[in-house]
Image (cartoon, rainbow, N blue to C red; front, side, top):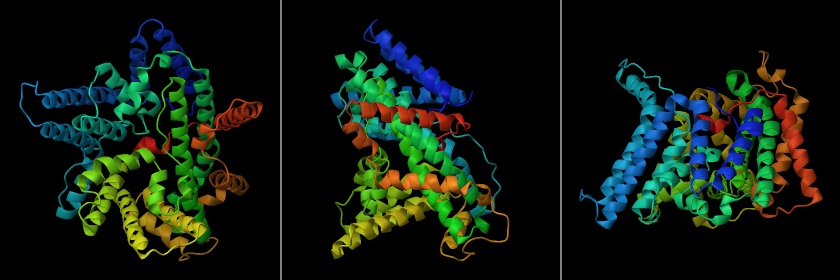
Length: 477
């Protein structure tokens, strides 16, 4: 089966409305009927894109739930096996990381072993199970929070909802158990909240507009440029890199807006995941604004357990680099992702040194410098190989022609006027308009709001109707 995409008409006009209507109808039947429906419809949603790997998701849920129960019993001294809770936690973490590593990284390790040793070990060529990166991190947070005694009581049905809740199952936000499940216990959660519905619709179509209008359009430029990196001129290389930098932001933040909006339909509030990241004044500020729930995970479950900044300056730099190399490798099985993480880790270390010098620079200059570091790093994130990334970098500094080479270039096939218009909209949206978080917080029903919602719906659906729906970028991670 094909993945049921958020940005598809069957999802918007069939799957999502049916899911919401049945959920609130079943809430009137019993306290748990709606919860069971949430799990069922989430597993159905997952099955559209990964029926083969549905048993793996279910196995992961059962194993992690069992491990958490044992940890709780070890804490209370009621478990028959007298094991330290930390040992049980380590077993659970190893299971999760091992599962992720087997499916996502086996061929990467085989390729590197073959290259170093001149062996010819066969590749397994496993497809990556849909959402395994996200539900792995999700469940690690759960086990660690259980070990830290932040979770006192666990019901299997609630845990299943925590893992599988379909609006954020595929790409986050990465949530904690205590952020989601207590909301399901509230009496008002069982009934339709029309303000939440309005917020949800508004956010959903803001996200859809970001994706359909901006990300998909710029994505054409990015894909064509990265498909022909050897022949890019300086101008084309900058168009290529900036197109992807804007595309990935509008694609992923658009998905997040849609996910948060859909969660509001069910009276569930998900954490914000983006806060105008390209307005960051330094790399640390960027990671406080970009994929905020991943940043939180890296800080709370990797950086701080490594020792954080508690063991001296050198250890702090080492911990930062380890954290971001892991963060880069989590995104994909390739050296380009590791380099991307390394660039961000190195930039954070340099920033710490710079701050000790106490040299102030103007805010606009700080934003400009930070943005260009981020744009440079995205080149390695997008490129299929290190050589492709280096080709783009060389072209950007003028090592090729300025405006074009005699060879045929894919970028010539694009409507430049449309690209310029979308690029202008992108810059205006990032630097002049309120972000989705602010829009949500300041939301008030009014004629102006209704007109804005109507415009978003019409524009996004028109663009959606003119193209074939594509998967989101982070679906691949």
